[in-house]
Length: 400
Image 1 (cartoon, rainbow, N blue to C red):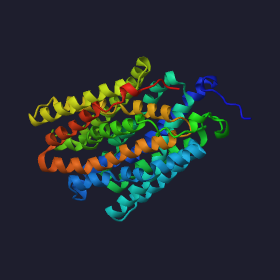
Image 2 (cartoon, rainbow, N blue to C red):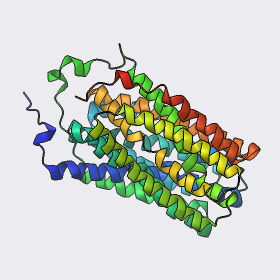
Image 3 (cartoon, rainbow, N blue to C red):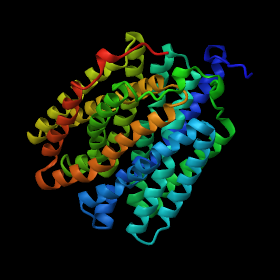
């Protein structure tokens, strides 16, 4: 019989080291996944792409992730987190290097798709590392820290990629995410240890049962998360080009603004996680964040239409609010699904979110092209508004 080690018996240093590596590796993957959005001005100027087509190219990594998230989740459930992180990041690096050397945008788009398919490994694997190494009363906070990976990766991309593209072209700019992912893979190979969990033969029956049967909680959380990811994607995809075209900012100043917004948004995720731990609930904070996101996007539409300079401040606030819910939903899904289903459940969660993330940029790029950014922001406000009534607050149960 294998002795099960409880997370409370594991040293603090080991738990926090796993969190740090999970954070860094996921941030590296997000430099690739979201970094193409910061090539939109260069693609527009250098290659002559309109916003809709540039948005489509920037969405290719997200389309790739949609194809493989559940498959990666099943692999993680069976073989563990370390192998998925190492192989996924290594393959992402290869795809990014290939995209940088591609002779045409069509081939570049194909490699961006393949890179996204490989990068999908990080989403479920790093989340399971964090949930597996920490007890329930800390998970909201530490998952909030881990969820900083996305805005940190976006911030790094916003700070570096547009400047490289402006000075050296699109192809050279793509080398940055390639190098970041290669380094992240090596760090995971050396540092990641799979969290303790009982052998399947000794696991309680409830841990092995399909959590989707007989309950609609997971389905509702998935649906809410899809609706809430739309304003997040719209904000991080179009803030840079909006600042340049509508507000008259330079590429350098706009890049710094996006970086600051993402860093502040990262802290917002941690604050939301701490809030949920103290409140003893994941769903009530998600509902409050959904209402705030809808109100903020509506205000952004109004202030931009009136050409008020305060719209830049509203965009900064939106950058914080729209990303704050991710860690809460992620934590609740991992807790509800358990150690033998959470890989697939998190894969399903990310599939829905990434499908929305892949579709949103070209759609909202087309709306902005046809009717302006104010119209795009106004339409965007409807999605979190719809999510408010779907959050399963009354069905929430204490975390195991």
